[in-house]
Image 1: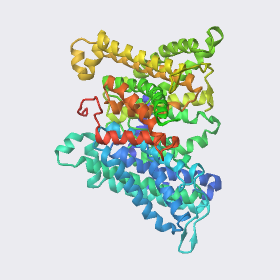
Image 2: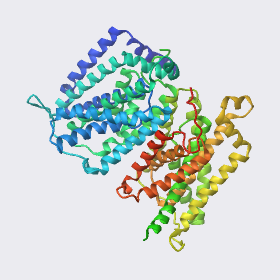
Image 3: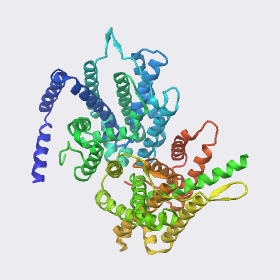
Image 4: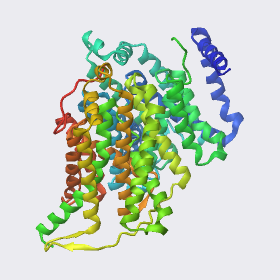
Length: 320
Length: 304
């Protein structure tokens, strides 16, 4: 019985293998998302904005985990790098928001290179624990340094102006995040089909064979790690200006885990799966509000069940 | 306080801390040696161990009292209970994944860790739980420094457990099988070794040792909570890496080194206790960069 249902679900997913159906589905989803704030009201708009933020974060982490097969357990660190860069530069140094954006990207890339270069040459499971340690170092530093505002963080981050237009309502931010999510999807698709994307696929499936074929495995893994870091940092920048205040606890290990769950529950390496995962992670607690503190336990059990019974994620086609 | 005084006092503190790290690191290293799995859930086993120890203690405290006798009994009971929990986790979660891609096993281990953590979070509502042990405050004056009885019992118990483990691994048939499996699992199977049983024994011992540390830490520091396994999990892993992952004497040595590094590190001007954890992570990263095989480890090829 369960088997038939799972087959039916597989069939639905398999429908999207045809490009034109995929484009139609994509257009319908975009149209729905464009209209969503008007029909759903302010509360739902804020929730959906959050879901779109997680889409960007999850797609970024997906580059490292899904494409290159690198388990990053400290991804929130890059999210923090972006948020704190914009917070410090606009508040303390009075820099224009749009100037901080490239600096945040640069900072994330440098952080990614510093942490990735030594560890990517090691056993793959060392990377997991080193990134976990790195995530904690970033959070501890944010909490203990003066420039990051200590445990209370930074508040009063100014919302950006774009050609005389002040982006400051939840509705405007919704569309900013929608645009970011669409850019993230497009970049992810382009990456997947690029030379680099094929190299990642190769390395993920057989690292030794890939190396034998002349792929510089350390360098392409580093590329995945750094590109993922940049996604996270950009998300952090807009997260900071949207909320106007940031604190170290937004970038905890639980945050990294939540993003990772979005990637894995839906199906790592598959863009629709990752988007689905991001929406599940954000919307499930809203829909299952009564669950309260059982929420994380439920996610954890879900993650375990997915790994044991549907290891390629919810969005997966058997035999593909 | 003279410099020498501070030095000796920190030495004692480092040894206590190092004993906890070493006990947890042993489980990491043994499990890694036998199944080549980085058991992320190991820190949470330590945490669950602390809670089971607390449960047992709260039952037996009216009978034998909340002193060291009570703690010792609850420690042993908890070690057995959580040892079996470790075996169950291995059977349910890791056994089906043994031939899956490495990424899947890592994520499964992470999922197990989250399930344990959030189960306890839900049960305790995220509150600190007083352990309810009453260990007393007696200490010995050694002229220059004071060593409390508690610290001596702690380090002594940890040492006894480690000596027991060393004897088990070097003298018994299971220990020999364990060492053989860490070299070549498939060959062991061909030689008629019951690999599944040895893996189960390894998980049992690893979990039991972490539980010993968890119960003692709860009794010594006074309280337990659902997240206490997280940091010690990373630190014990650091200890295992310092000593050379897969090496049992390495884990003991690494634990003590990390404990001492931490307690002396906090004395360096500029590194206060709030930077203690950052200090350990920096040690981990440096160690992985400079000498990934650790002090006593052998270089090893990544599994294909």
